[in-house]
Structures are given as C-alpha cells and as structure tokens.
Image 1: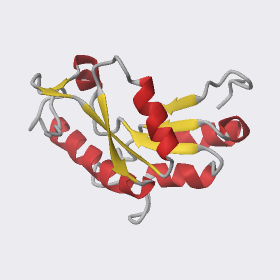
Image 2 (image 1 turned 90 degrees about the vertical axis):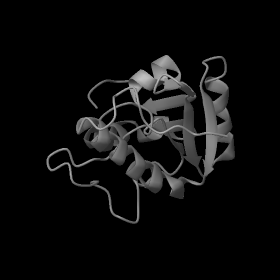
Image 3 (image 1 turned 30 degrees about the vertical axis):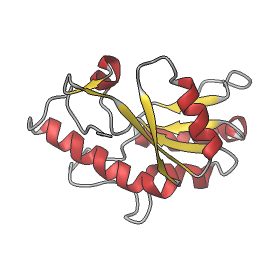
Image 4 (image 1 turned 135 degrees about the vertical axis):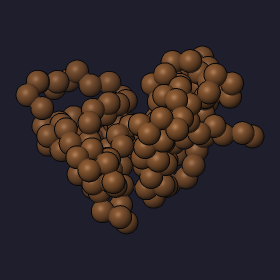
Length: 161
C-alpha cells in the first residue's frame, strides 16, 4: 500500500496478494481502480486455524472487494487453479486447464478471456459474482487436499466438457 502507482495501472489489475493485504491496497488505490477490471485471485482462508474462510458465510472475498471499490469491474478467477497447473496448462498433467470466472460484468469476463488468448488456457464463465462464494470454497478444499498430501500441487479440479 505504500507505493505510488497513480497513472501506472493498466485496464486490468490482478490482485495477486494474500487476502489480508487487499484492504490496504484498495484503500490506497480506490480512485485508480474505478472503471478497471479487477481480477481477484485470493483464497480468503484462515491460515491460522486452516479450518475455514475469513469472509462472512453469505459473502466472498470478491464480493467484499466489489463493495469496497463499487466502480471497479471485479472478476473472481484463478483461485481454483494452482500456479503449477497454470504454468503447465494441464491439471494432473492430463486435462486442459480451465480458468473459472465469476463476475457481474460480462464485459470484464470477456476482457479476461481475451487477455488469456494464446496462453493455452480457456475461461469458463460460471455466472455472476455470487458464484465466487462457491469458487472460494472450492479453492479452500483444493488447498486443504494438497496441504494434506491427498493431491499434488500440480493436481486439482478439471472441467470436462
């Protein structure tokens, strides 16, 4: 939050930070985020207890972000995909990686899909920002499984068409 990014933000901003850092970033850059596509990749896991999420049960990190920067176009994406899976473009070294995306803005989801063109990744529109709640629960489950060594960090959930 201490850096000055005024005028340096592009049309799309990816919040690739721990959820606990989001508030200070939003407070410091609320004006700059207006009208931007803000991609929330956080998983608001309680890492102290590892037994739940730190957002209200009827909400999500993405919904909380949207409340704090109402002029931004918030998209929940990438939180159900481990970094190794993104880099490999495959889940479990077999299935193509599909990035789930939830937003109240069809235009924001379209811009995310366009940004990923040529990457080997595809984007699946899972609906409104309300679906972020389920995506965050899914992300938490996936992290729990990998931390418990029940799946590998190159594994996860695949979408089969």
